[in-house]
Image 1 (cartoon, rainbow, N blue to C red):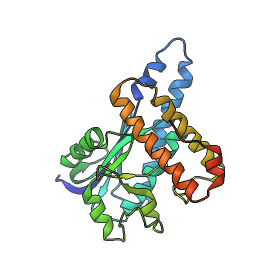
Image 2: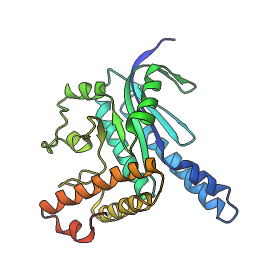
Image 3: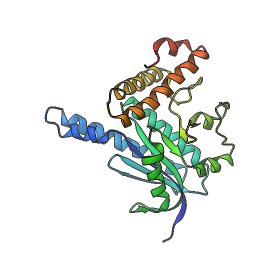
Length: 250
């Protein structure tokens, strides 16, 4: 057995400990909470296991609130499919009232049905825990370079390529998977889901801003700024349906 060059995603749900605590709280319907967790985690796994339809090398490992997905480097088209599924997962979790954080890296890895280890996993984990910081999934520069070979050129101005709607460059020079609406419905949601999604997102941010912990407030403050900037862009593009329903966060 030897290392393969693989692209790897490490992603976990934020606030998972609080959800687990509810499953042991006698004053709460434990069955309902456990079913919610079970279905959420199974849904995460199934979403990425669909990748095996496109790539025989795709491997998925789920443990606790985390999921690790990887595929071999030579299957570069998988970059698009993986980012697409990550964006779909983020929006799906938000509709359930949850947020996540993660890192996508590239390097040496062994990933089978039984084991997973290697420098690429450590790097992806460190990206999730350190570089991501905010509720976002960040991408290693190597992933961006790989994507550029296939017309993947992240830019705030270019909205024609579907990849450009999924990836943004943040103010700290980190690329992340976008889950805020642009002038186009870049989130892949049905029209009837869109307003519900944005209201859920707003409620999550409002709740998070009530935390007194400075670190928590910084995380939700980042989301608030992205949310308000999204509304400003929608209003400047005369998207009345959205801007009339949603007001900026304070």
